[in-house]
Image (tube, rainbow, N blue to C red):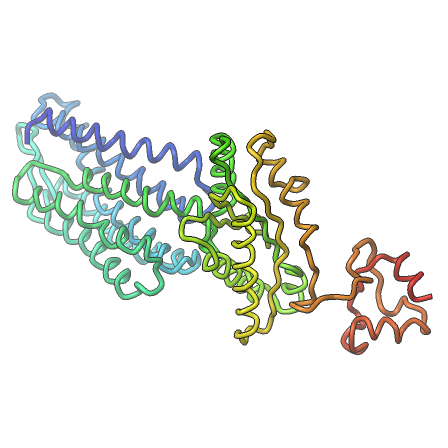
Length: 434
């Protein structure tokens, strides 16, 4: 392969990986295993592309220093050759199982072939098993070169089989990018075998990394892991853009949705049930809306919907569809918790000049509008108005004995309530009981 074409390809691939690495380091939540593996995958390919360029530059150069540097470059390059495919195996495995503990258990067993291959690369300086340099400091493949290809292919074949066998666990959006990742490096390695001296594997991996970045990593960055809808980061970005591009004929609507009594659900049924409530709620909201409507989990039990709707009557129809889906679910489901939502919604007034926070957040327009529509429920059943206002928590035992029967009628069987806290307005409750 022409020297200058080889260098141009490496520069192009290096810049792709470098830009992705920088963006990932800036935006990704680096404490998560997924981000660590992706960063390591990019970094390993960057190093190998750089070493490949050095090999081309130093091949055949005379002088003791050139020989020493060229030998070291080849040892490092061969030692690292299986690393990208090893890291890809771990990364793809995480995308399948979404279980950090499971993937961490695979780190060392899968690392064994990489370590053995590294020792063979180091000893090749004297044995010439994987590679050797002749008297003119020109690189040649050794008789053990097929072992390098076999180790790399083994990782790719293994994880491709795992992906296919577990396809039901993989989201449709990322299934094909995961399955197609090996194709470009495989094509590069075939060319490399046919045309001696050409090394296109690392360029193929760079392009595969770009595909993964666009279709998986960037998608994960803006998606809520538990529910599969978008996350707050993406919601804030889109909302700012919609406000910035507002015009008289181009406005939008927003809906804030709170799951009623979510804390009580977690406390009574446990966090696994709470997680299931979030998943069901997200699915109900998505299925109630149009394909192009935007749904995100904005907080713990809070969802936001952004719609390209500028008419309040159309917005109300969307809200009604959510309520209808919720009612149908509660009627037909055997799930132990009856769900109920509180919603605040409105069309954004393009002339108001409201910022994102004014329109949306804690003291914002949509948040305040929730209280106009809010109904507090006890796992799907309305509570008496006397205990809807929260200002003080008192225990059943603190009520005077003559007030017990009234509290019992309000809250049910006394045997199930005695250590439960009654959330109520103390003054209102006292005056009402007396």
